[in-house]
Image 1: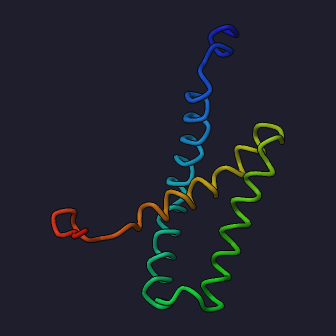
Image 2: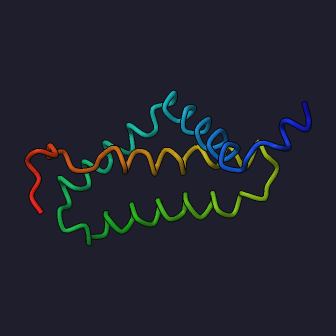
Image 3: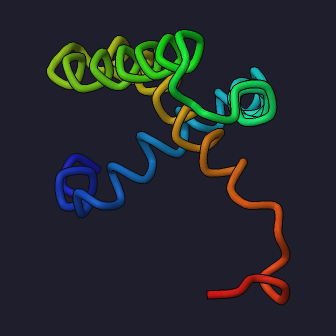
Length: 106
């Protein structure tokens, strides 16, 4: 059993680690909250250079920095800090461009 765990490729370990954190985040509704926040930011602050936008950028940078710094912590704490960062990335990616691919121009 221990040999099977140790022989697991790093990509599979990363996928399980980040995927389980994202699963907990979806269960809590955090990526959907980030999605709604990005939609509000784009709709209400279209220049994306005002104080509110920069505050959101700072919060996002803080979440990602905390995840980066926590990678060497003990596993449960490091995994708990991965939940908000995985939800942040997924929520921003879910917003995307609502234009159907068939109507996009280059």
